[in-house]
Length: 442
Ligand code: 5AD
Ligand code: SF4
Image (cartoon, rainbow, N blue to C red; front, side, top):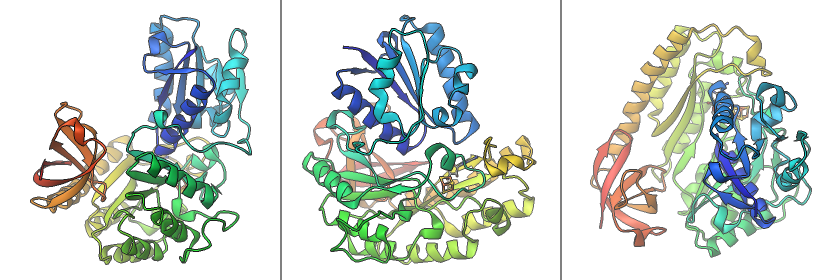
């Protein structure tokens, strides 16, 4: 039985793809190992969203080539870098045996077979199989209690800074009947929380209505949310939402269904209309704020999180201050922040990257202060409350402290034994440190 080591970089979609890659390999008689030294096949599932993520791949290949005991092991590059670089990867980094694009991952076993024992490289950037299997075996899920369910792949938005429409192709929604079947299976297997995932989940638009006929909603996505809620699974989260397509009915669906979690991730990217236009985001600050007001007016305390890029080409100090102002107004419960990273092939790559690295860092740190403060305030609101936490695993530091998420996606650490793993437990919040809550079982 061939041993395969699989390392994943990047977003939830990559983690989810890797789960399916491992599922396929296992079904075809391979053994997945966490020990890269003993592996006969080494796979990197890659990310190209920022330059740093892409460089990680080249560093890791270098390390593996140098330290690997098994010099004959095959190295395969999958995912976004594979799709974008194609043939050129073989020149860019020595020692790669095969390259498999984002839609070709279902053919991982034939890529290995086609490369094994032959002294030639292999590449497959082809389309997805019509009968591609989206479900994941229980053993290969990243968690026994939490599962990712892709509902839409690709992206049609072409924000000017973003490589994703090029690495992942056009939007394609999965049939609702398939999604609902997967959720019912997961529920039967004891999964407590599912994440409906996609680059833009709320752009969900399947070819037919099968599976959604009995559900109301102003958009196919809000009908899907109600249909998934009706499966009775305990928790449903969804990421990422695209502001332009964020219909108020999504908030109504959350208000109506307790198992639709009180968390919305809505990346704003910038607080300046001028920059948003240059980014071609398709939303203005005014209509972003209208959506936020609807979310904040919910009867449930919906946690609002975002992504922001600082230092986009042409960003002036005034543009940046507009972003700071927006962050102060929105009081985000959690955030991801990035320095603009030029990506070859995107429209913004043609613009001068004219905000200096020093200024990018200064703006990053200044905005971080504002975002950290609102994140801390949001966590502090939980102090002395008794909240429901899904006990997902051990805290990174010790084995007698468990860690898990609230429905609002805040993280809590609490003292408890492993027998509680997989359960949704009541925890009284006793302490709040920078970005984590601590509590005691009640
Ligand atoms: N530079 C910096 N950040 C980027 N993102 C996407 N492309 C870039 C880029 N070229 C960020 C956006 C997006 C998140 C997933 O990554 O904020 O929402
Ligand atoms: Fe990239 Fe914009 Fe698509 Fe998000 S919506 S993946 S930022 S192009």
